[in-house]
Image (cartoon, rainbow, N blue to C red; front, side, top):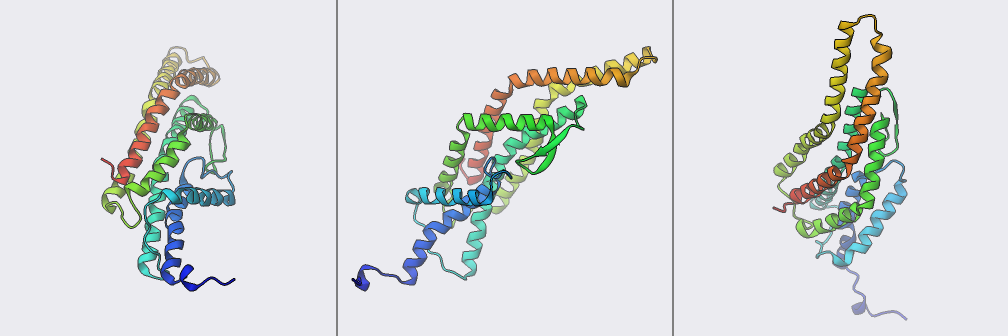
Amino acid sequence: MILPPDLLPLDDKAIGAWVGSFLWPFFRIAGFFLVAPILSSQTLPQRIRLGLAVAFTIALMPALPAMPQMQALTLNTWVLIAQQILIGISLGTLLQFLFQIFVLLGQMVAMQMGLGFASMADPVNGINVTVLSQFFLISINLLFLAMNGHLVMFDTLAESFRILPIGETAPLRESTWLLVQQGTWLFVASLLMALPAITALLIINAAFGVMTRAAPQLNIFSLGFPVSMLGGLVAVWVLAHELLPHFDQLSRQAFGLMRQWLGVP
């Protein structure tokens, strides 16, 4: 049986509305999944990542506001697509800073305690990092999942469509400058957490320097390296006990920065 044309209107406006209701949020979600922590891991195949973005978009479509109509092959459409991808990438980058704080923390402490040469491949970022950075990164990933951080991450992404609807963008200069400023937050937060361990190791190295001047016959290289490593391990053990409150505070700041970037006062 052939349906009458009035019951199934398939003009260009209806098709553009149907396609746009899926593609507009998909571009922002795909950009977020491209750089977001855990989801952007090199160990996660691209097909699975793409499937997750499609599934999340389909699940979110009924709760989204009305989308603008998509007109193919127009300059405005391509500009809007690029804007949505950049919004998703920016939100994911702000959250990625949270995890890189602890990677940089491990790098700082490892260089001071003599473990800078002990590096291993990081499957998340695809680069070589110190063993201590890998330890902190795995711990933070587990804490993030245990504290339902992934649910808060998805909720913030879904809320971004209400705060910053499709077709409206944050002021480019202010949002870009806010994203650049978070580089200082990355280094300052990691340095503040690593400062007690760095200070303790500096005192140990200074004590060995005084000992070398007092007793030059002592072999500083054979004695100082194991003592520095032992002192560094003790500092890491003390730091591990304070890892949870630090992560809780920094994660709140990261999600607050995401909302601030979207324009929430």
